[in-house]
Image (cartoon, rainbow, N blue to C red):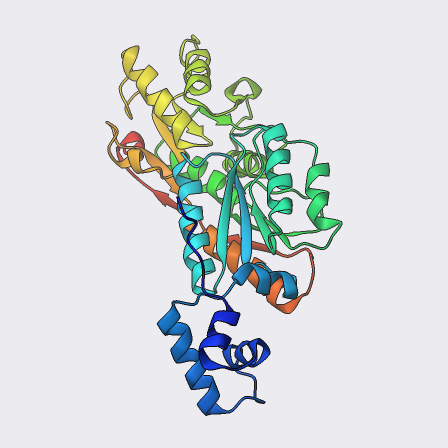
Length: 339
């Protein structure tokens, strides 16, 4: 099969009987070229179907107009919403987006870093994998002053900017909401405590309990990976106890769903016997029965703000610096806590 040929600057030059350098200057709107020649060159370029070589141009300017994104799981609504926010703003600013997925594995995350570095991206937006505790691979960017912005699950060990939601307030208003409904023993199923978001959600929950003079019962606080399977195991541990809690605040909606399903399986009424609050406002939370009370965080807004921050760093050439943007959360009250 014959390889399709592409129109070059030299083809335009031959058609107009002028030099290639004149064509190049005309296409770049050089002031040394007359408007008459510029128009002739542009018209011939359209006629011949000429497309500029963006890669070659970018290599000359050391820019690719491409940013990279590393996310844990695209299947999670929060992250897919964040990607939508990232892409929408990036494209309006003339940037393409390369998306890499770590699948919540540190080794794969490190591979994503190398992939994006090899792709010569102008900057990176990342949310770390759930088990990442060593951040050396990110120094591939920071040591070379490649702009890096973390969002949601962030790294405090590197001098970079970050965009998060107010996880502390989310944990606080979730627990205080359950207290306002008359709940007396409120359990918390949290995430890994090396990740800032789960530390802050736990601390917000504890703050609410202390504010209302509740006893802090360590056996009611469980750390997990917040999967469906983990959520069910935690639900069994809490609800099979002879002194079970009358409310559970889960650090994500996936675990909250597992709690609801197991509670119904063993004959507990929700919210009469057990009130449940999740975190994130996943699409299913509105449709599960009973519908799930949850803390809403906007992945789209987080993605948009992280992109805005990254592109400002790229454009202004300010280099990596520490700036934290905190976006608000709000309680969405539904049936699972409506006593």
